[in-house]
Image (cartoon, rainbow, N blue to C red):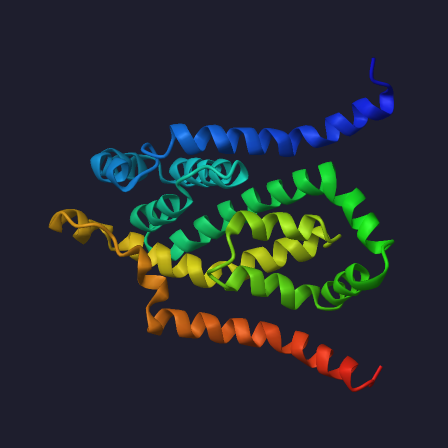
Length: 242
């Protein structure tokens, strides 16, 4: 029989285990459900529900977005497009960012509660290269957190997990998540806002738009600004100013 300490350890890991299990299940069962075709086929019903129940439709939409992000289900991009389609670029991107932030925070808390606190303590008590890397991240937490949100190449799920293992304060995680995902959210929400014309043409949305120079370069510029404090701190330490 496991003792109380072992039971507590298992209980702490249950939320993140549940997230991983549901994510794996959803990857096989929901891939075709949360799709462009589903939105296209149900657009009239969705618009009708929105027009008749606007406040309720906003709450339901955000709740569904939170569930998709919290359990890393396929369809986050389609949810963002749907937010633009139903609620326009503004306030649609605010609804998208709110749902994404709440869902990301749920993953962050589950990971930190299950594994992050112990791992963070071990990293803090470590020595040598591992300790230097941990200290470097701690010295630049704001910049690092903004950077992993702004750079399109960093998967959203990874950007939620890594801070949980590095003792990042909750308030700092929430602020950088909310603000850091706004540029990308605005781009995809605006694509969603134009889906009416896409449906009429029988075409598909251009999801690669974020990699167009006029979109990507400003985002990379913001990423460079976020990285400046990291570079400055590195150079200061290299020159022995501390």
